[in-house]
Amino acid sequence: MKSFKTLASALVSALALTFAFAGAAAAQAPEKKDLTLGVGGKGLLYYLQLTLTERLGHFKEQGLNVTVTDFGGGAKALQSLVGGSADVVTGAYEHTIRMQVKGQPIAAVLELGRFPGIVLAVRKDKAAQVKSFKDLKGMKIGVTAPGSSTNFFVNALIAKDGLKPEDVSIIGVGTGLSAVAAMKKGEIDAISNLDPVITKLQQDGDVVVLADSRTEADNKKLFGGNNPAAVVYLKQDFIDKNPNTVQAIVNAFYKTQKWLAKATPEDIAKAVPEEYYLGDRALYLAAVAASKPMYSVTGVIPPDGMKNALDMLVQFDPELKDAKVDLSKTFNDSFVKKAASTM
Image (cartoon, rainbow, N blue to C red; front, side):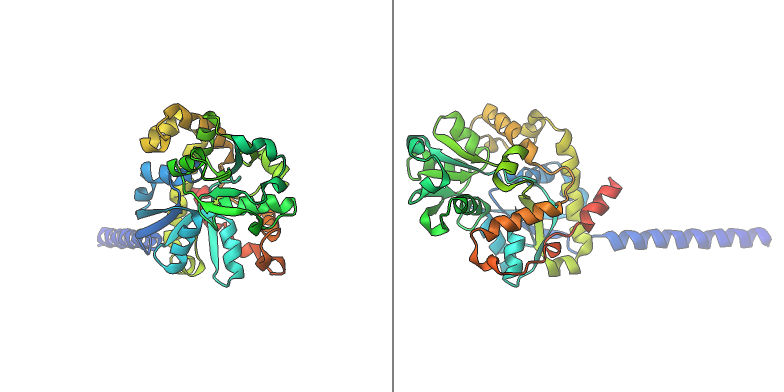
């Protein structure tokens, strides 16, 4: 009888443990498995971690089915989130600040890029007359899309020399070959874009660089230090309602960051689609090598980086000059900290 009771007790304990584990697993399951992710220029190195996360299977590992919608620029990706056609966006950190002021709270949950990686370059035949940012007055400047981070970059730089956004003509030229073509055809006088577009134009001798934000030294010179760039952001109410889903998203991207920190340009080239090369694999390898320093290795935006981003926006955005911005609400570090503790 005693052995029967002992066996029965052991069985009850085992079942209880099984149910406990099952409950814990269920609690961690994503509330929403099918997601739409918006991005403005997926083939740009600015968003390399998105392509790698998708191609390396990290979304699938986290139980997520992610459909990526690629737009001509970050402003359009933001619109997709606000409009409800996207659940999550990989885009510029500045959008979290601007949308808070507009009363539409969105928050970043992971830093992808610690530097913008954006380059402002002038068409070669115009270079002699452009010695400073103020010399851009009246010129046509190509950006990925009006209202995107490449547009903000131009606004911030010309503001240093006393110019206003309306002192230049901003033209959306997209990403990839469309941006290259706009410069080669003479449709624009200058361009604010990212790699591999910039490296392609440099190698072909089409442009002269006026401002470069791909390295730490250049960012210190331009903005006084770290300036967060690409992030993963969502509406605050989505984060509140779907914490397990958000954790799964961050886990997937964080695993990619760990992989990217050790990867060579060759490893990266093998992982991305060949169309990203813009027809020149050697060019792509050179662009990756030039851009790699800009990627975040921790996924965490430092406080001084958030402040630098706000200070940059205040220079040219009248809506932000007197606005009270709570930077703590623009970035939630709890998800990346949890990811870091388990990987």
